[in-house]
Image (cartoon, rainbow, N blue to C red; front, side, top):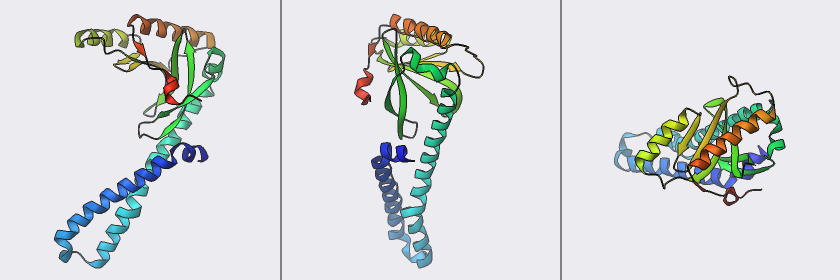
Length: 207
């Protein structure tokens, strides 16, 4: 809980105020036109919902997702060879937004001259994701589509902002950290062939 608040306190407060404000203003506009048809007790209940209850439900859901994703990620990081990522250069960390814009720490490493981060998708908790960030907008639409299809066969997602190598930790059993390093080195070689423009992770407030 301490790290959640340390990293996201301002965002959570701001989000609470925005959600509460939008809901309350919306109901107030409705009330302006139909106040004669609504009892005072119901008005009190609805204002309680818009000011307190509904914003807290939304914030609570985001918070539960934050803890759930961290649990899934830590579960992978306790398994070999992912528990030995530091041996292949993942000895730094930075912060990265989750799907709900709350940020959390992610491990940062450098393989074959390419910076990458380790993360997971909360909806695919068994899949380890290694992400290289870089601009690939030098490709035209046909070149991009061709590369997208080509990289799919290597379990690599591709966008104009970089590459994501996916490893299914349940199906793809790796015995040693050297096997993982070999996979990630091959990943970097594939990415380098596209001649992307790296986005330095130092811009993410690396710590």
